[in-house]
Length: 283
Image (cartoon, rainbow, N blue to C red; front, side):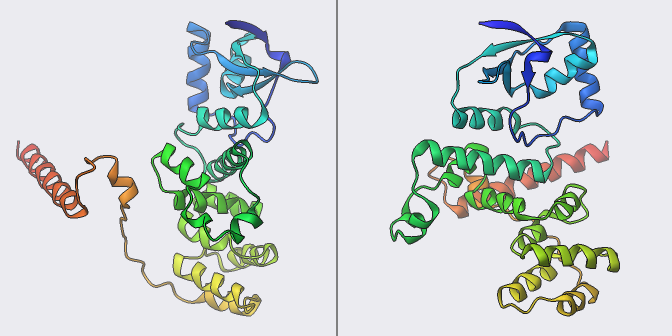
């Protein structure tokens, strides 16, 4: 049952990873709320301290505030912490313009919730189990739900290990996501040194530079001199590559298709698309 809840009684989800921005999209949402009201109710749960915790609907609440409304229509659900966390992530993760740091934190929160809810073994027990690698992993479960591989989920989660300054550079697209995965393996003090080096050299690391830093960090040889040497070296032009994994492509083909058959089909589709473009340009 949908009920109107006063905005003053609504509280944000703890450690909510998705920022609520006053951007063009929020302006459009606010104008829609002004004209039509809130079309999709929020999902909230009761708080022990009183009021309600928003599980899904942080942007709708802010739009109501901007529109001058005093209440938000919502569904009240009695959810445990882990179920609420999973629902919070799932209701937001498909939005456009999600920052890498937001996606990373969201995946991490959902992964931890799934593991707790499933009663998974501790990390130490998992690492010591010879059979664990054969088991279906929680990050693979998240990836399957998102249409991506478990490796991609693990890479995104690694971004939560970046110091705030480097996370901001990734969000601002000063550092690409792929080298950021490598940088995340550096120790916090090495990352702090990298921030200083980036500012002094006015350059950010490429994938190959980040890989070299990670290797030196693992061998205990990364310091101010070696980092400066890597960062001051002229970057080799990196070849643009598009990598489409089997996990990405598989959902578009029948299960009976072999990798060879998938490749042939893709080439045929691209050739047909190219001919269509050529005909369009000749008109």
